[in-house]
Length: 105
Image (cartoon, rainbow, N blue to C red):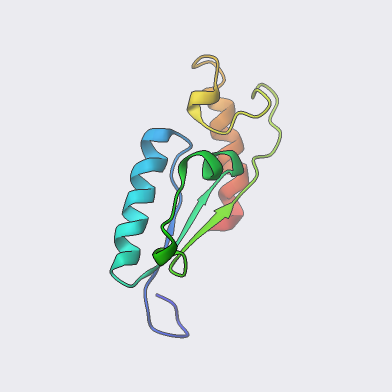
């Protein structure tokens, strides 16, 4: 709850996979349609290619870009599981995710 107004504010932090980001985005829109504020965090590349908020909800849904840090073993520009050439670098994506979002909660 937002202590200043008593209204609910939802923070959403999906895993960096299309199958997580897309449903989280739909849920954020549904929550906003009920008059609640939502902040949805993801990486810049994912917000550009996946997250579309209708203009009538723009005042209730805030999309925040969080940059992933460089992690040895993670391919350049990899911001989602689909960007990985195989499952081998997946632990590096998890490591970058943990570091990037640790101070956001």
